[in-house]
Image (tube, rainbow, N blue to C red; front, top):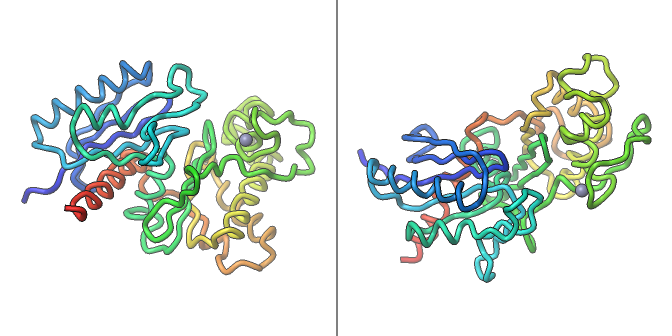
Length: 300
Ligand code: ZN
């Protein structure tokens, strides 16, 4: 049986993963490229997609889930660009436009976290939930919300990592690391913020170290903030920091306390681990490719 085949790109700050994919359980080929310069990395990805297209047959569309920030307004002259990123050499890079011109295919383009959120809501831990949020807590903190199958977007994509937080009473001395906002989530609870305080990652600290409760408390504030805004049916917590044993349980306990029984969603039910593991990013590319393909074919 022939199936529609898509080209998918998960573009990260340290590596790109590209895939030829027909469905979440039908990944036909993948490749990895170090993120060096835009010219080199996007060029290598394009060369690979062209070569794979010769092997697997014509691709229907391309989906790109990329590190940001990004210009997502399809009417904007710089649609498809990575805009003012802290990744050296990548600011104002035309990414999706270059891929579209080179391959002459429709290109779905969104943030890596919106892509992962879409994939998790479609095939992973958020399946069947009316509203679902995916947050990754690692080198940075980012999140995407899916409502009725679509990423939530205002003037631009959400920047959930920069929610402002109160200070934990045992954490008043730490000089926050976000250069933009002072006490924001990423500045207080990301992997680098944890290392800056305690010298090691959270999972390397003893189980009874106060860091676990402090970080869980910050992340629980984020969950309660999300509940206040949209009462999500699930909040999927991924990324390196959340792999710390028992952290999710600590967040659930704190979030229930902070929520004071006010919200419909119970923290024990809505806070979940990702269902797609390390495939969420690449399958985000698939979800974006499928969506642009559906839009284009509906227009015909
Ligand atoms: Zn910030």
